[in-house]
Image (cartoon, rainbow, N blue to C red; front, side, top):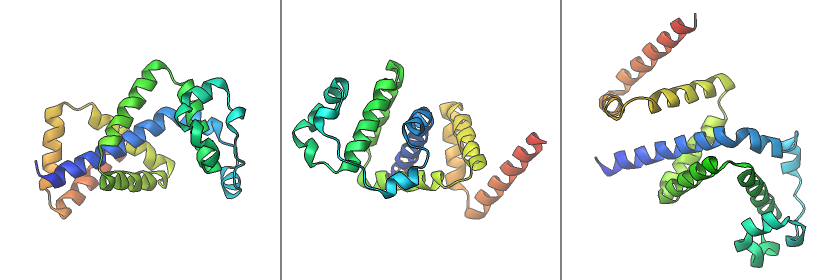
Length: 179
């Protein structure tokens, strides 16, 4: 497998990881955010003192103790929100999150940037297209490794025109199923 294919595959896995993480914690994360997020983001958050954190939050964020007061208030708020999400997770969710983070750390900076760009592009999609992306991801995930390999090879060996025709045929099949 060429290094370009490995890079593309890792970036795709990172994007899938990001989508999976968002799906797993989106409800909890949104519950922690105020109703009017844009207004709050426009105003600078107030710094949180180390003493204002709960004992559990201090324990989780212990590695930041010495430099907590020098952190940007927005970063402090992100860390506190993340700590609260972590505390609300089940042991299985925590284990999955740790595995995803471990895979993320193994990506190169270029792969991470590509994954971020893809995540931001996904976030801009309308809800129906987001649902289609999630459905396709789950459908792909349920394929056997051999089926996935064949599908990847078929896509990689296809010309841009053939890829477009493949996508159009797939959309037509989906539309027929929905009728």
